[in-house]
Image 1 (cartoon, chains in turn brown, green):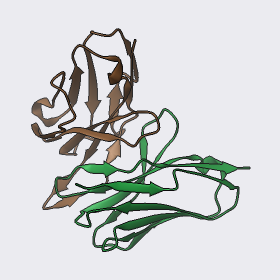
Image 2 (image 1 turned 90 degrees about the vertical axis):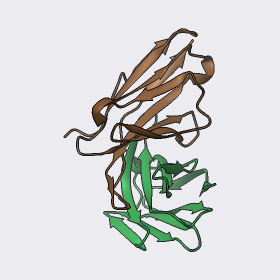
Image 3 (image 1 turned 45 degrees about the vertical axis):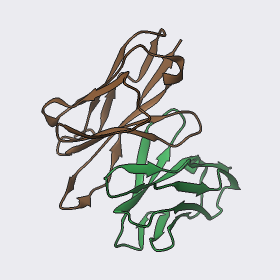
Image 4 (image 1 turned 180 degrees about the horizontal axis):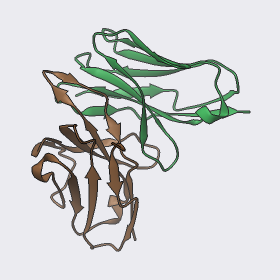
Length: 116
Length: 111
């Protein structure tokens, strides 16, 4: 297993366009998280999945954002009608949970989104 | 609401110095705490994970401690090297399972 993989690494888009990012977690991990990070800040939670179920979505997330994890494997994060304020690094992480225990979380290299 | 604070925000030290990074959190009901390293423009690399029942973890020149009752963790880096220059982030995992991050400490180790 090569760890958490995110694609693309960089995305430049025009304001108003839709973009989609993909995350492939570590294969045996049942939990998958999406975070957003702007310059000089710590990662900010967006949403997470337990297998294919989306269990929590940040109240900071507008309706333009949607995420899926079909079949509990890879996940996609879509942003519709992008705005300049969406420019950020989007990070994906995965971990294994069960019985109230959580293992180490591993992050991908992120997707850097620039909206022009 | 869990809040995580890291002090200092930035730190510059000469090579070879031992140093301590601080992390504090407001809600002591955590499952675990994890320290990460982030190089500019890159993702996060996990350094150490401390479960709530543990007091410390060590990996090479790194030692992390956890005092859950006081809401504090420290990351000790021994004999710092220029390659240690990066941003260090701590994150706590609460009862919803998500990680809550601090703002990070940016470390510069000068040769």
